[in-house]
Length: 340
Image 1 (tube, helix red, strand yellow):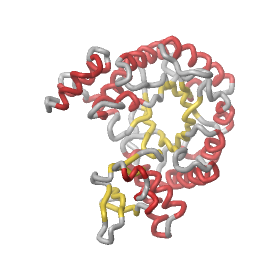
Image 2 (cartoon, one colour):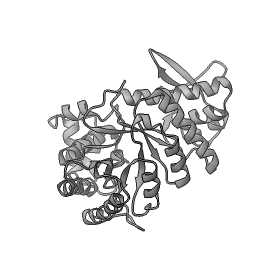
Image 3 (cartoon, helix red, strand yellow):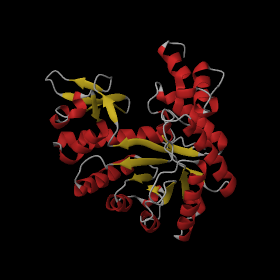
């Protein structure tokens, strides 16, 4: 059952690029030498067999396994036991995110295969499994209009309006698909042919895009703005640009419009990414950002409300994100030396 709070959580985890480390607690080797993914099912633990094709692949050699892709592979092509385990795995992920407060569950199968027909089958299968396990609507995440359309067609309207992740000036052709599917949209600040490099470019692109969305019949309260979050490790100013963009958009469009940025992008390249993600979400919330694409176990109402910048870990992350720690060296050094 959902414990949905005021912060709009778009649960990010059911994505075919997501990995588990094979040396971690989620991967086990059975007595017969086969490999399994371990997951929580009800009050106990369950296991999902990992096909040989994954164990023999490059990801495995690099110490990781794409666990959602394993579940989809088993669900579509496994033995009867494998298919059942794949369903249980994805259903458990859906229930876990809903229980943690998700408003939507983001689903992406773009990296499952290079074959479009196979990806369409995958998104239909996953949508069915998730919606049988959860009461919240789906967020259909794809860069392919045919996969997006198939995903929207698989959405159960009784769960509420689905979400399209995402439309932009570059993907303006997705707007009619979203409108026809009765969906809300994540509206990204990407331009027609380039990525924005400043606050003003973000604002200009989103102003144009919002006009197109409104003209297509998508209401202001059905729009979730994404100012585009670039890693702070690339440029420490990136976080401040997002915060300033949020402030300007909230001032212009008022309380009715929403936000849905991929907040965890900010922490790429840093240790203890969850800490940076949490502090960034709080800074954005204080600026008017009422939601985001996040892991609901890491970012939710309770965590955001209880954050104390007096704690050294949070203070260091805040200084980094406000541009006061060039290259994040104080933050990195504190973790390396065990002082945070």
